Amino acid sequence: EPEVTQTPSHQVTQMGQEVILRCVPISNHLYFYWYRQILGQKVEFLVSFYNNEISEKSEIFDDQFSVERPDGSNFTLKIRSTKLEDSAMYFCASTSGPTQETQYFGPGTRLLVL
Amino acid sequence: GDSVTQMEGPVTLSEEAFLTINCTYTATGYPSLFWYVQYPGEGLQLLLKATKADDKGSNKGFEATYRKETTSFHLEKGSVQVSDSAVYFCALRPSGTSYGKLTFGQGTILTVHP
Image (cartoon, rainbow over all chains, first blue to last red; front, top):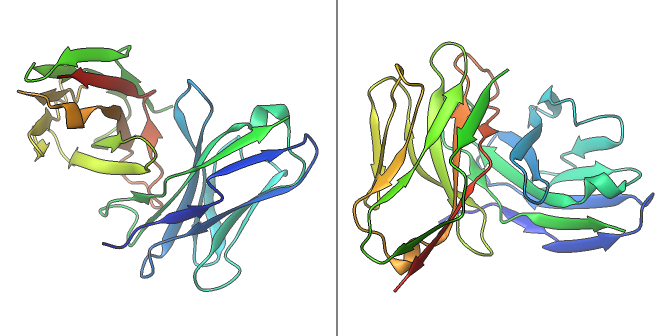
């Protein structure tokens, strides 16, 4: 069964450093998402991406964040200058259609900012 | 804005006990409702869904009914197994959304003992 994969599974970084989280969505999917979950809190929507551009973003997704689909398979989330409060589990998801189809989630990347 | 509230956890049960995890929501219109499950070390997996009032979603012995009058989507299972131990997330997708953003509850940790 096709699945969404994410790398790395864990990342530790120093405050102020740039990190790139990588996701490989399911191959025939067209809509891509990033969510995050700070420990003990809700899973929160960050951004959706379709047709090589951001379709929707939350208030959390400020100028420190960016997303990119650099090739036909990868979908990345970049945090330019990490803050302590960026420590969270980051989930990538994809779907073939945004309104009726299931979103498939990856296993997540746990980011720890020191 | 839209929100989802789940019962406080964690929930600990003995095998074959009855399970209820409460979920209520706030949203305009007729959102689609979901339960996702996260097993240890894995991503969020769709457990069941309902897209209109009075619909019942079911899967793997779990059920939930979309109750518009009480804005609820409680998860139930008649006889839990140790393998059901996981984190359960209630979520909604607003009606009329073009890009499929999900809003999640805080998750409920379920532990089932033999």
